[in-house]
Length: 637
Image 1 (tube, rainbow, N blue to C red):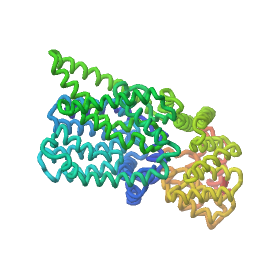
Image 2 (image 1 turned 90 degrees about the vertical axis):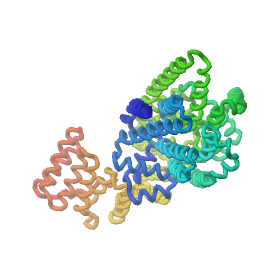
Image 3 (image 1 turned 60 degrees about the horizontal axis):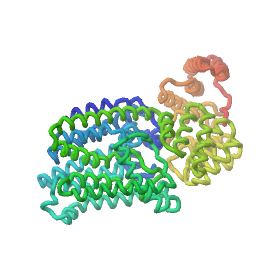
Image 4 (image 1 turned 30 degrees about the horizontal axis):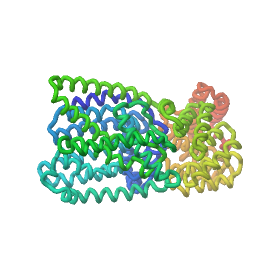
């Protein structure tokens, strides 16, 4: 049965291996994270355990992303496949856990299938950044399975093994700090330890788990308070309580009727009293029923409290970000609802003559619907444009979706459409600094630095603690020939983030422009140390070293090494890469090699329609054939 569950899950989710990275968090976690992209290194491992990057402390998640980069580089298919493997493993582990605790084969299989194929769980699997979700659940289920073995046979080593897995779960994602309470729920049902052991004794037994929970809460608060946790001034206590109430009801609604699923649900400032009343009535009614049926149907109370309790860390009482809820938050909590529904229906069908037939028909119908809806939901995760176009179609007043759709359109060269999306984002949320920054960067790319300056200045004013914003402002100031101010912005970026390579690189470019070549080189070296596989930086620095007139700066040997590394990183080297290696070869007297590479560069440039570049490369080729180096100074802009 476990093998069948695994095979179907793999087949259903296999399309994710053809999906791309998305522009929502994947940059922080992988595509724009040079530490992660280096793979598993000692420096990276140290960073994983000491960094609060992305407002979280989850070292095992960072290590898993590093391992992916070690294996697959930036091929998104490999990263997606690892997420899928963890989700499949979680499905099998859940089935094994339920089978061990209840001995019920078919109910356990149906619960595991609902967990595997419910469309609310697509986000956790199809989103590379949510590795932390599938990874933390993997260790949490191992912890529960170990605890079940301990509880059944009083084998103490499995108690400590459960504690170890719980620690690993928290080091993957701190959401599951409520796991000690889940252990108590298992003691109630199905392990039924509360029949022979007092509740107080069972709670005291779990003090090491509660200690880890307390430590994790402190570390998580320290990691998120500076950048992610919303203040009471921004999100009031009353709004938090109202949103928590309606969010619980929304999770239930989307479990039963999973439509209009989105990657981001905006926090609504004004929640209607009708919605609040309806949510309160639903939650109170189910709670009363579960309590009154606790002796006859203990699975109802256990599953309901599982759902309510495991959502507490992400229900919005401590507001992180500005979302009202998130599909990914339901990944572990929905197990409780699946337990309730499956066992109640199983008990109910026993009362009828054709109950088994009805149960089988219902299971086939429900699981078939889940498979169809999951397959449909997976389509939206193919790329950023599809994802956020869908988000805008199913939500309202979604500034973040407009912002990220604009970024996707900008990346595709659709500048006018991207500008419209950024303006929509700012109209909905004038305090969203990312929209100002993106508008400024796009206008800068469109050669409108004067228009870009105001947006970049506003972005820095709204969030002066982010290095990338100072970098964007510095680029605009550099373009406007305000060099001293640009240097100041790049310096501020470097101070805010010691690992931020672009600030060092741009400082070097400004110094080159000012004719301070010797001062620029150490900044270039520092940038390449921080981001050694950035082929654009490698080519730029190689061209500086190969063609600069300053003999103290020029270094053909190093230039060739950097250019060759750049070409190896990008596979099919563009014309500029071969042109750079040709310059470096000529500088160290390898004119035959230089001529050969320059000839290839000329052909590539001509094929790409780069007529001016091809003409200039043709001139260099003629010089190299005569064993003459190219002495034209590198254009410093």
